[in-house]
Length: 446
Image (cartoon, rainbow, N blue to C red):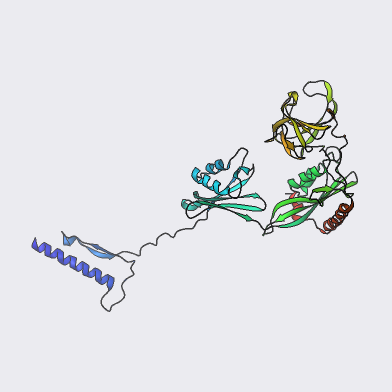
């Protein structure tokens, strides 16, 4: 037993001595191996004969280098009835964090003003592998084309909102086209944005019946504003500066002008405002489906007087107040279904029937402005399909909206007319010098 212990101690001492020699090297000898080289020692204190010769490991494998994945982003688009809180929690954001971000946003913008179609971009830390969202970092939205609002998480875990006013350049754009089927179709082929087309229709809607007055071969010209960002990309289409319709050989030009008292409107070359007391067509993009006069009723089956005009349009199409006034009636009205009547003065009212629903906040006694949305196309009451039934009443009796004389706004006179002529001449020169943007003209063919 004593001999065994002595042998064990001897072997252990030799092993330790060899280890030191392998690591440190002999005095004055070559440098020791790199620190990444280890020594494997196999000993059997109970049976020295079983000891395995010493061997070295290869270099240690390098540790994994961390990968910096980009933030994970997700785009949310508001649908009818959506709330910002519901949108964020639906994207997997914890409710407490969603409420914190919304509270921060409230310092820059009212979250309740988010409308259908509004786009919100939410940002997360990358999860494992960078392919899934991790911790919520913040959100961004553009409430209008001029502003960008961001909400970011601070180091203490709270949220902070800030607004950046975008640097934009305003430039005019020119387009023209020949009408083959409709003004809307021709404008789309010319690359006009829908917002610009609708503004054009509204400007002419006091005098032009878009169902009867436009024929193949008629044409249009237009100059409108476009806003560009720092990279030159178009971010918004603004107001129309000049437009002209040539209908059956007669050219009708309108110019945007701001009067000395700050009122902006469209005027013809004689200084007459395009605006009339009432719109003939209080709806955009609709088709006249039934005129004023005697007709065979589509539901009752016998001939009777139709004391208004009908515009067929998809359900939900906005309906505008034909003129400013006071709401006399809003609610269900027998065969008219959902019905609104607006009093414009002591002798004139307009009526709108078969609505799908009324505009939020509309009520009896409420004041409305011309062009304000008062409801949406539907098929309530005695109706065979979605359409707007529109009436103009004079002294309580319905008159034909397509032929009744519409009183116009006063004509520009004196110094105001001189200012308008000067502004009109500048606009004409600008339009003549402006080339049609090939990119704009090409959009309608895409």
